[in-house]
Length: 207
Image (cartoon, rainbow, N blue to C red):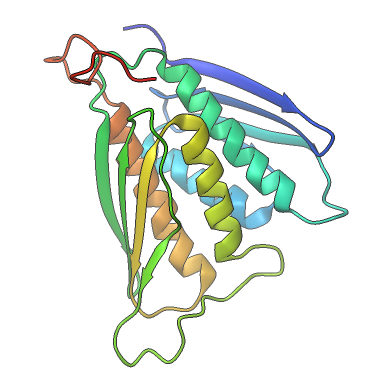
């Protein structure tokens, strides 16, 4: 099997980002986006997905806010996965995982279909939970996470469904199982099925 390795560099007036990926890696990680919580989440994602991932933001317009950097990291991560997968011959294509953390459970389902879809993290709280609000850190929020996942799914050509169940308001506690589950689900979906010789679509192509 050919090595599924890729690198994508993106430079705009707002950010300068470089991401290297080995899908069939050994969990080697070097992540410096300038956004502390996102660094931690991507580290978890790569570890649980068994990916080698180097994600470096050389410059971002942090003097304004983290919006462009957060979004552009998602863009480049999606592009580097798409590039590394090539024609996607032999992959499982579909994967899912369920990961708990305290009273929160994250359910993530992915389909590398070439047709992107993400409508936001679906939060389901138990009856009697006083507030649906999830806390914010000084720099990150659930809204930022949704922007990141939207950019990632669009640029990878990924159908991405994320559901959160439980009664915890802490942002970290909610996002950590999401990124772990995404890593596990993508490891499944990008895995090679030796029974499948061609592209995993009855159409014969995944754009």
